[in-house]
Amino acid sequence: MIHVQELCKSFEQKPILTDLTFRLEAGDRLALLGPNGSGKTLLIRIIATLIKPTSGSIEVAGYDAIKDVSAVRPLIGYVPQTFEGYPTLSIQEYLEFFAAAYRLEKGQRAMSIQDVLDLMDLAPLQDQKVEHLSLGQKQRLCLAKTFLHDPLIWLLDAPISLLDPQGQAEMEALIQELGIMGKTVILATNCLTDVTVPCNRVGILNEGRLAFYGEMRDISERYGNWHRLEIEVTSGMEAVEAILDERSDIVSLQITNALIQIESHMTEAETTDLLKEMIRGDVTVSRFQRIEYGLADLFLEVTSPTASDGKTAQG
Image 1 (cartoon, helix red, strand yellow):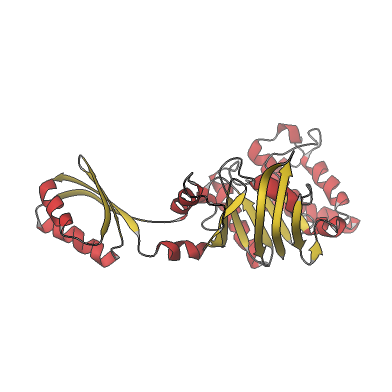
Image 2: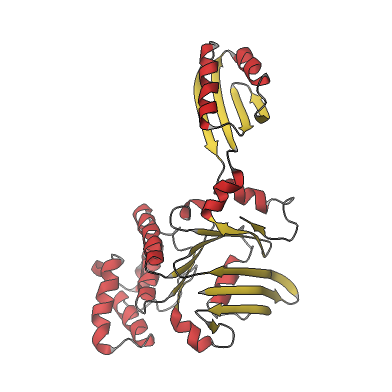
């Protein structure tokens, strides 16, 4: 559905995006992550045909997205990072304008507009002016507008962060539903918690390069049984140190006052046995937490200053 090959973009001879290559099929939902300034919004705007790349190719649903812009744009639903334009229109007028722009049949427009108003919980506000809407309400309106022409490709630039908790949960469910419907979604965000549930793929941009690209399940496979243990004790620290000294499956150990931090590849059963051994040794344990490595750890790993060698880390 989307095939990006060796994509580069420079401004005034300064590289911003470099050698991006990835493929998304129908139903894929890609979480596009990266530090501020890594190029997420720029990549979204290039795929949306709003900016031309310096080199490379983009294919969308079989069309050349650089040469066949008029064929690609009707297939794309783009939700930008910030809501702009038409402040004096009401919600109803705003949607009527875009229904006409999308060339929906006149007899279909009223029903389509009512459907998206109901879907995005905007029906009670349909006569309110755009300039008087909250940021979250504007975000809902932009999503409602995008639904009107039922696009195959959804390009979402940080749409979740402005929504309230209920809206965030609904947005996650919506992204999953779009995937079930065979739509292809790219969700650009800085919030890691936005993406672990609704997305099946993850790409991490760092300094304009893909530092990681793969499936969400690749992350757990990448780390295997590696995890962190955080243990707090109120008594028996000497016994704890003696127990830990005898173990060969601890990679790193840090003890700060009553807090013990361990990196290990112990199985869950072995972790439980360690806790039992501490209790038998008269250690008073106030907290014992096993923390699995996940997306946050991967993000920090591939975006750290020492991690980048200019190559893509595949899952």
